[in-house]
Image 1: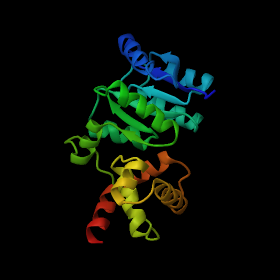
Image 2: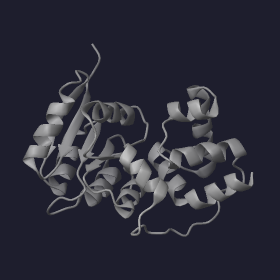
Image 3: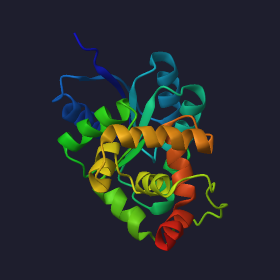
Length: 223
């Protein structure tokens, strides 16, 4: 018997928690094991039960979802955190991803999209909803620019290409389809990239890719 993917729902609105639980109940491989009404409760419950995935609202009382995310990631590197929020400002999305979020979904996602996201981050993928991708692609007036050094010159052109797709929110499967290579080849490249850049997990690679997105685009344009 396959073990279920355990999920903690953190949202200050009870009606939202009920709705999310109902959406996830359609997938027999996903099991909701806890609920939190604020960021502090999310940190405490995550520490106690170590769920596979946390669905975290951004705006909550007492402690925000982003602050809870930071604390959970410091305490527990095995739990994946998806921010699930009505907030779609670029600064909030980037802050979430740079602080270790494994995904960001807006609350207009369908139940199928939600369960797909939970399954994806549980196996180490990073997931962004279509609304979030569009926001990051086009930017918003409140975006916070980040000044960072150029990428390590030891990255090959193919590796730069893959990291740029990671920054755009593509999964390994989507990158493989776009580049005309196998998913296993993409995963091999990602592992090699992480070794070269000194990051030890997918969230670290995502943060680095986001920070260097401008230099990546410039490098691709000149290649």
